[in-house]
Length: 323
Ligand code: PBG
Image 1 (cartoon, helix red, strand yellow):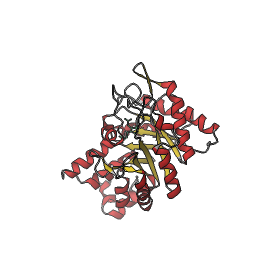
Image 2: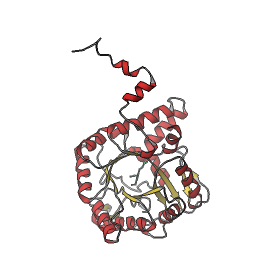
Image 3: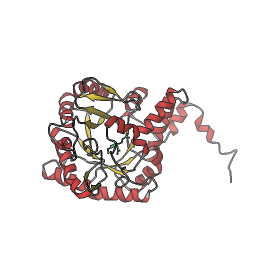
Image 4: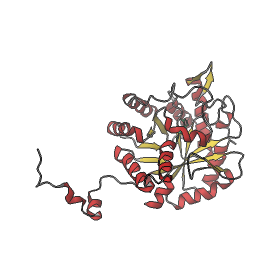
């Protein structure tokens, strides 16, 4: 039953001022987190062919990039390390002199106000490219926990403001929380990659981070893209283990999951607008097929509307400039 012509929704769409008054969702630079790749053993920034405008940074150039990010008003970065040496057990991941630990110390010394969040996962550091320890061809859950907790601890000792476990081992949030609390870091928040799906959208990231699994895939630990109820169980578990922020990743194909998590819990939610989502927009825009700025703003607004409080996105500097 329609109330037309009494009711006319176009009345509040007539001009930008009116549209501004009735706008339900806002995107602000305060909500953006910018991922940074820091590589050991390079002297110049190295381009990532599938992620136009994104590079691997040498430690020596990090300071200048951090200043640019601060000047743009972006509050936080998410760090990924690419070590010169990888081994079976990912030793560089939890070495106090590892590339990420050095990067954290440098960032906190030079740009102390920039929040440093670190990705906690072994895949960039293991020769086999999996996110945990391998025995008999399978990723071992419980044995990986101790290494992940050590990794998180070295990040926090180096000055990281938050740690973000992305490995998808069961129990890792609790293991990290206990270790941090025991070592005197009870104030450091954990941003848990709670609902992380085994996604083809991570393709360009694996070029950026050099973390493609050398055998098999990640489906035995990352989630099946078909499962939303299970995503809520992951979120519940991470909350019970002490997560301060929960994440849904990727974002675009999982907006229903973001919404369900939002309706279910009162924790802050992060959404990760991943490498493949970035690459698709860049590629179509480079072909002149879509308007990069409008499509990007529409996607990020959609992620906010779905219920995310904060968005991890490679578009952060572009968006900061546009806003
Ligand atoms: C590490 C990790 C990955 C991403 C973030 N942390 C890759 C993976 O799980 O294979 C993907 C981020 C992106 O695609 O932008 N486990």
